[in-house]
Length: 202
Image (cartoon, rainbow, N blue to C red; front, side, top):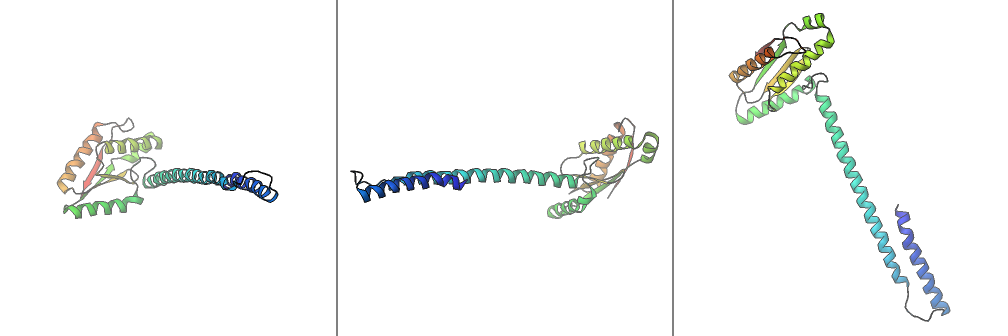
């Protein structure tokens, strides 16, 4: 690109230089003004071409960098989420635990956790099949998420077990929330089925 851009300037200097050289040597032209300096205008076009190319290149790099950043964020999000329920997975559990601990230490407050287990989930799989069980898990997680704000972390611990981290919440608040979640599950239909769950608070 730069080679093509410099061609007009090179050609202009060459042609004008030949005119001046021939005119001065052979006295062909009557004027005494040299034309070669006017080649600077062609050189300015070359400089403008360089700047334009640089700006376009930087814009493409910026766009590509933003695209890569989005891809990294999406990949990170996927690596931290359970594919079935979209809850956080156990891989990111330690990071979330430390975040909850730091928030509680900073504010001088305790933090709590809930462990939830769907009652008799094996029976759901045995009687209705694993596909139905997957739907129950998705609906279960969705119901929990609807009743939790962004300050509380919902993690799929494994199988039909879920874990909720509650930064800056004491045991009484955890128990009240746990009871509210339990009632929400009982009132709803998980995969079209009536499901209950057991919850422990610490």
